[in-house]
Image 1 (cartoon, rainbow, N blue to C red):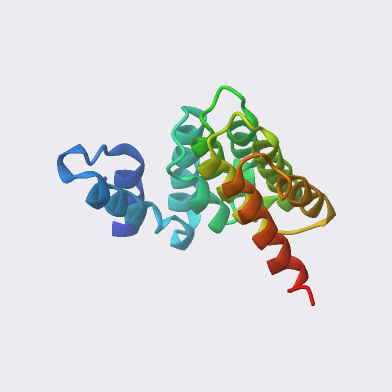
Image 2 (cartoon, helix red, strand yellow; image 1 turned 90 degrees about the horizontal axis):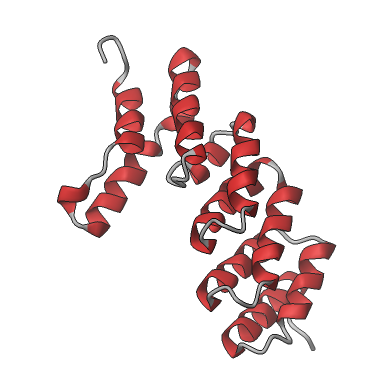
Length: 173
């Protein structure tokens, strides 16, 4: 796009390219590296890049979720909230949205993370990631959910929740 900054070009490339020719790790690093420039854009370039990132989210692609949060793009809250709370969206994708949302609306982000944590049908790795989010952004509701998870049937979830509570409250003793 003539007249656009290289940062804008990188963000657009990150949001629209498949990187399929690169291998999974290199593709992920390249894509997220490109999108990471969004918070540094200004003016019309920033608005256009945010609009593209929000449209990407609404299409079900979580690539820009965290970056929109880091950029402070409050216009993305509805799209992030929809993705984070949609039961038809894969839990790992929902967690991308939670990570972005919690930077813009901590209460909504925590509520979505608690919902994921409490769903025992969700893979333990995703539930443990929800625990990490709650440990990093605690409040009384998060602590209650972590207390419940500390009694979970899954020992991996149970252990991580206990560690998170200790991290929040400090060691016993």
